[in-house]
Length: 458
Image (tube, rainbow, N blue to C red; front, side):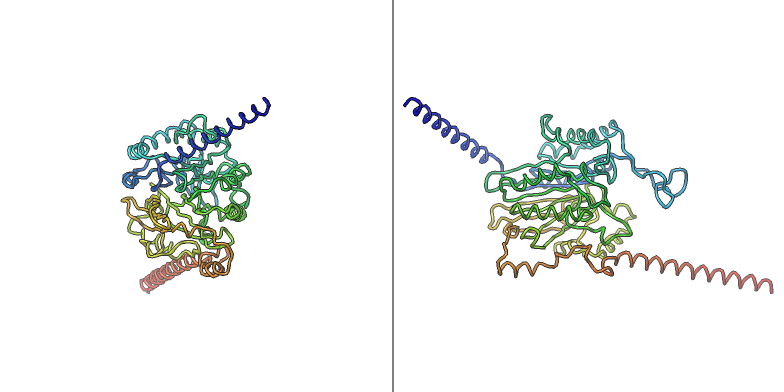
């Protein structure tokens, strides 16, 4: 009898303890502030002017997300076609980018962290982030980079990561955060696309085994209304498939098996409300992928790049329109073309940041995502009802809906070759025309010179 009473008392204590834990969890959840404004950005040269922080602060984000190239830590040598050290051309004999020392990296992080605009943002908003190649330590580097362990510590120090954080013990800077109370939760998953990445031409792994295991656990964990996956490189757009052989950019599209694995993992998790944010490319755009066999709903990738670095800044201002023309001529199957774009190409090649606004007070809940300019004005944007980011299943009604979404369902790599290489054809045609004009002009000059000489002789 005594044993029975003791057992019942033990289970009674366990029951009371469980109720107490549940009550604490509910209270903690209720105390979580509702997140309705998130800003994000990438590509901030610590030595360049950074006026854009004012507009970011005016947006009043509760969270700011770094998406990489938070500093430019590596050393860039000048373009040299001739001389002892040649960084470009067929006779290139030294790399254009070289790693900086630990002391130099620390100094660059110190400059970035103490920028007056960024310092003010840190006081007002929670700052989280991942890295890309230039803060990882070397342009286009992957798992082979030898300084990654030291640079991981420096990057986490920059983000004020607690000393007992798991990020300081793991191989890579990937992390996840959950904001807001139950029913209005936002999960942010930040990927590390550097620490474990195989060579660019390998079609190997981007994340590595340990990070894939972690990501699967995160996606299959407790559901949230919104899940933002932050990648330093673009997930959807694969512009290298259409800009090559002129130039190439890093993206998940250059690792097709890895990207397909990511889509399948999201689909198998049955997780709704997922979209991507990315950086790296020095321009802003919004991409969309509609293939229903990926997730059952459209995927979006909002790219904001950069806070100081921009593609239009590398050429004289009077010629900046040529960048827009080239962007418009470049074939793309993923870019979202809409009336909300400032330019016809629906890209933005000047300094910019990303702004996410969540309206929890409407039905359905709506997410507005914008790429904003240095003055805080939108350059391109998209409004996404959360009801659109729900797995639609496979019934006949939804099959009809899926059939209407094939516009963004063709990968750039699968475009007909005459379309895919349109930009290269136009460039070489233009170049050939210029050479032909120059040759004709030169021939005319030589003919006139010869005529003049003959006339003088006569």
